[in-house]
Length: 58
Image (cartoon, rainbow, N blue to C red; front, side):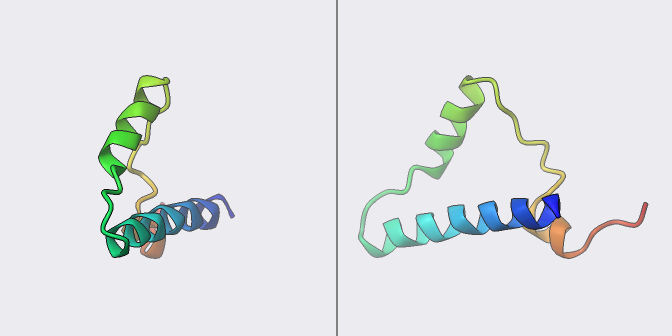
């Protein structure tokens, strides 16, 4: 379930970026991620969209 939630949130971010590009504005995805990291949060990269679609066997 948590992988599906993470996949959903990554899709939301991707759509947000796409909407900004359509409107001709800059999405600032990298800047937003940096601001979140500065607040003490981190992303392991373990649950990227590709890894969610194709989980590695345990």
